[in-house]
Image (cartoon, rainbow, N blue to C red; front, side, top):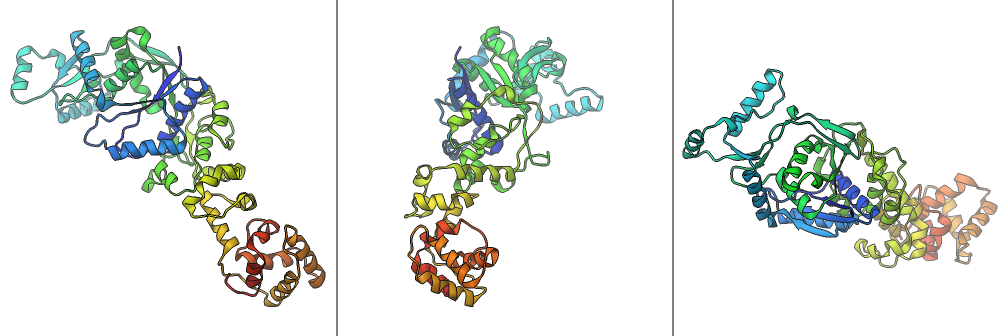
Length: 449
């Protein structure tokens, strides 16, 4: 059977790095197995789901390089969930329950106070027809629960290994709200069945739901219909705490919009978080796919450190060719940047948008820093007589060594400050020809140029 996976975000907000990791792992698994990657919008929450969020999710995934093979929207499939619910009613597995949210909360509190797990007590199954009629006559509308059997369920999770959940630990899940809208448990299982999803790869926060969902798969599709599950550990911050979503800083949208973080850097990092394998910067998704093995993921928490991302980001940039970045230059208004300039400044970039800084250094105007005016004037005099070609830096500094007796930091630091206004940067033997004779001489004279 060919592999088919899905990424099913709710368009109730923007994607963050935790969502991105799940989308990426599903995508990589599908591509490594020559399978199908489906994007499915879990948009049955009509109050919070928006078209704006859906479109943002698709833009984020496109920026990330995750091209889907199929697309589905749950709001287009409500009739399929109604049909599945009717099948369960007929079989006796779906039953109405009339408790309010407040009543259920009181029951949970009482169970916890008694040292018992907060499991639904199935009081609705003990109602008589007359009692149900009376509740409905008073205006109560039922929500609908799936009746679980009491047997323990076992499955072999790709990440967690053999997993067993006792029936006594489970509570009959609600599949339909009072207004008839389906909840995640029903809609996701119906979709996975009807679209032929073979592997469900998701976060470990869904691990406890799996036993109930296995029963629902079997009730609707038979015992052979249950997909293989893989529950990835959740991301934490660098210290092992809950990953903060402060001010959207970890959203894909923020990374995409600031033109500083490379999608391949993020993919290189997220593809290895949760494994014992070293993170290696990659310059194509194909390279990441070729090195992907889902069995390498472990149960330990996966720590996301933004400093790691920035380090990987720099290494990815340093490996990118001019042809790879050329289409992006217009967005930074950098007409004129050529392959020679990219090769010169690439080793000094941590973020792509820093390219604009070095372009301004080369093309000006900048305010030079002149700490030793007399030396700068001597350097300008020597430079004025030199032929300005690819070897200008070597000949110029050799002549200055001879004429001034300077060497090392005493020679090079004041030249860098005068020519670039900065303590550090690209090699001046490459940058000086790009600055040009007239601009270099003006800066040595202390002029903004």
